[in-house]
Every structure is written in C-alpha cells, then in structure tokens.
Image (tube, rainbow, N blue to C red; front, side):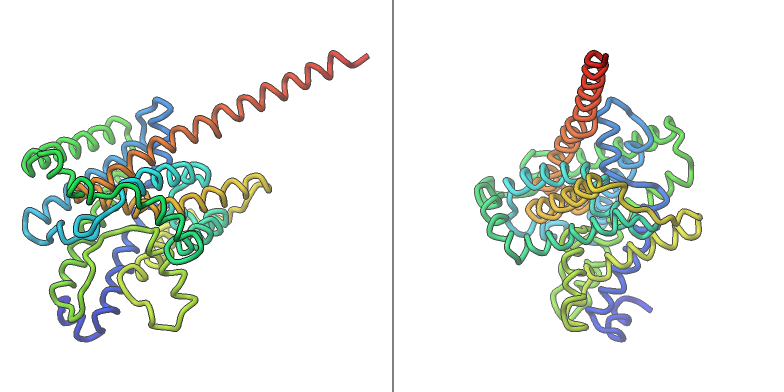
Length: 369
C-alpha cells in the first residue's frame, strides 16, 4: 500500500500524523541507544576533548546533511520549498535565540529532544523540564511572550541580504558542498572508530541522522498526493512540543498533522528502546537548587528555540541539512553559549564556591581558641 492509498484510506492529516509518529519512534529509539546529545558534545569540545559524545553528534550531523543532499540531487524533494528557505527568516532571532537556547541547554542538562528521550526512560527531571519548555514555547508563539519574540526578531531578517540559502550567498557550488559533506561524513566515521564508540552505538547514531532525510522525503511525498497543501518539513521539537501541548487543551481532532505525531512517537520509541535494553529508571530532583536550574534552562530553551525558529535538532540538524543560513547561525550561537555557560556555571562558579568554603573554614580555625 503506497502513500496515496494510505491517504485515501485514513485521510491526509491522519496519514501525516502516523508518518510523524513512526519517524519519531525511530528517532527516539536510535537517540536513546546512541545517547545523542548536542549539550554533551558541546561541553566535551569546549573542554578540549575530542571524545565519543562529539563523535556521535558529528555522525548524526553529517548523516543528516549527506542523506538530504542525496535526496535533493535525486529530485526526491526540493529544498527551496522548505519553510526555512521559502519564507523570510530572522537573523537577529537566530543569533539571540541560539544564545538563549545554548545557555538553557546546559542549565537543563539536555536540549529539548534529549529531555524528551530522557523523560521516556523515567527521568522526572527531564519530564517536568520538557513540560516547562513546551509551555514557554507556546507562550512565545501565541501568548504573552510573543510581543517580545517579535521585537527581537524584527531588527535583521534575510530580506536584508536577499536570501537564506547559505550556498547561494557564499557562492559555493552544490558539487563542492557535496565533496565537503562527504569528507565530513568520512571524518566522523573515522573519529568514531578512533574513539571506539562501538558498532551498535555508531549504527544508532547513523539511524538518528537518517531520520532527517526520511522526514524530508515523507512530507515531500505527502505534498504530492495530499488534497490540501502540506508543509515540507523534517524534525524539530520547539513548535511540535507546543502543538502537542495544545492538542491536549483543544477539541479532539482539531490539530492533527505530522508535528503532533512526532513528539509522542519519539517518547514511545525511546521508552521501548530503554525497556528492551533494561535502562528504565525513575529519577528525580536532588534539591531545590537543582530544580530551579533545570526549570530556568527549560524556559530559556522554550523562548530561545521559538525565537530562533528551531532547536538543537530543528535548526542545528534539520535546517543545517538544507544549508539555511539562519540555522547555521543558530547552531554556532548554541555552541558558543553552551561553552560559555558551562565555563561560568559548572566550572568557575563551583571553583569559587569551593575556594570561599575553604577560606571560611580557615577563618573559623584561626578564630578558634
């Protein structure tokens, strides 16, 4: 049964939802098994380490771009019809939003997709943080934070420079880009072998990356058979998380599409993978300070992701796979903010507190009779 027959049988919207759920489940299972996490990779790199976490992220990143370019070269989808390239995007929003998201990602100890995967394994910290992320994302899209988001997004857009296509703006040909991407893919595999991350982990990382072109292909194929217009998209978690939240607050059947199937699919896939591998474990907050840290980070990610037009996956992998300039700006901003936040919050601040504690102890000893 092909997509046209499925759409005729279940309807366009339900077919999109089922496709989103299936691709989401694959992403969730592979992400859980590979421990794919941009935060971990960014911290590892910022601390001068070229380790397994960076290798896994690079495999995902290079696989997504390679697969997407193959689809595009085969004429299986037109990148220029994707939202990131077909409509004006905010460069100021990408930069500011990326910085906020990167800082929040470190505070919450995981990006939005990682929180979703962790929550499926029994991590209650990630579950509550993910809920806060979705609420703030929705408030940033249509709620009381939307005026602030629009104000920050307005100063500089891609209208000013005439395009959001990085290859067009840089003058790099598709052939040259393909060679660079192929070399990057080979390098990521070489790094994985060097760091001995294991065959199954590497294959799971390849699976995570392959979900991006798979989603591009599916939504493009649905656009060609659906009666109503279908948005060409891949994976992102800021907008879909907000949409999924609103689904539970709206009338049944009022919001049925690819995005709404994605988030539950990721949760289910990650849960099944963790269950089968014996990795389900309930975990909670350690104390009030830990809870404040996580929720603050989740709020920053919710607003930052919506301002930037994508999260660590939506901008950092999906948008980058079609060479959208704003996605690359967001990605670099996320890396910079993650490194800076890790340095201030998790390295220098604890060090200073330790020194102060030691000094206080010395003063007490000196004052003792």
